[in-house]
Image (cartoon, rainbow, N blue to C red; front, side, top):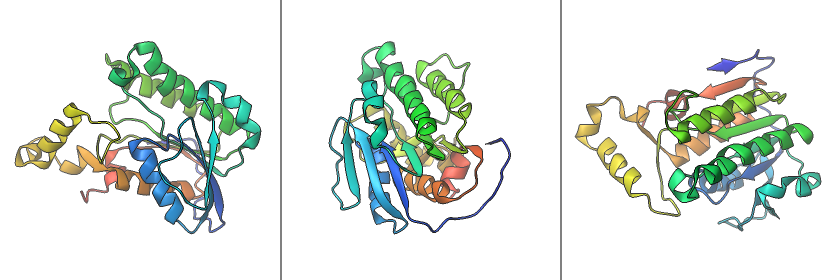
Amino acid sequence: MEYGVRKTSGHSNQEKSVLLAGATGLVGSELLLQLFADSEISKVLVLGRREPPHRHPKLEWIKTDFEDLWSVASEVRAEILFCCLGTTRKKAKSPHEFRRVDFEFVRKLGRLCVYRGIPKFSLVSARSANLRSPWLYFRTKAEIEREILALPIPQIQIFRPSLLEGQRPESRLGEGILLSLVRSPVGRLFGKRHLLSCSTSSLAGVMLKEAKRDSFEKRVYEMEDISGGDL
């Protein structure tokens, strides 16, 4: 799904500085490793309260509370902002706390992108994001997508993965059961497996590859785009 008009298309070989929010989560920690390994990435600035899970000469940790994001705005200089922030209703304990992370903090990062002139914003959303959803999680994802897409950022890429296969910092029994079903013969009865789940390495890889392209468009990537049908 594309928004706006594509101006150019290509791949820039210039070294890039990137900003990453959500580096301690499932997708963010995998993306962090891929950023370290990429020769075109010269510096990785990580925003967050907790120290990043990996060390590397490219890494610079900017310790911050997202409530007070503007206190570190002057320290931020990057060509790409990756937003992998996200929690769950259960972990957040209340609807208010959930929206604070998945909506308010993400919106602040989008506005930071505009304020600092960062031309590329890459966001992890969810496959079933829908403004009319009865579920707070999916409704909030759709609401923040709308907010971000409305910002005057030249290149916006939103990724909508379904179930993610990877090692989470915390155990989620429900997701584990669903992933087991997806991998089983029973899962094939419900459709192509690559439309039901994808690995964190695949998602992070697509995010990085697409962010390095100079497409200057606003685009939403569905599961078909993320998995490529090879899982």
